[in-house]
Picture (tube, rainbow, N blue to C red):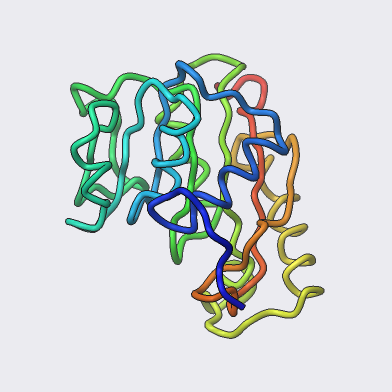
Length: 201
């Protein structure tokens, strides 16, 4: 099944756009960080929805699409591991209003605490994270196989139930409008809207 037409540099923008709409998140004038930006689908989506600035973070080098790389509202942080980076050491960083996450091969239990470090110490900040059940399902590491709908849903529910232990409240969750992988042949994914737990801004 081919991907539907979309206006973003990658299909990831379709996923985030659906979440912004479903969760009623207005990013206009907000400072955002995109953890695991890759080609830049999430970053492009944030820009097109009016974000004031987007910090595009990825461990890779040279993947971010060139139209975004030269954009005056994009700050590129390549060869930067979001799990270990200290945002306070990045002079132009500043604290963000919204973190969006699409980290491959990384469990939410590791990704969410890292995202919290990039956010302002305010209750209104939010995280939108792409949950990939096939990366969370197996105790011995991420699975390469396609999960059934039941397996994906059960795994997502388990992941969400564990998130308060890493400092966030789950405000909402929705299935991604498109599957992971090329041509929609991959796994079912979910998008979660999160907020820092009281006492853990």
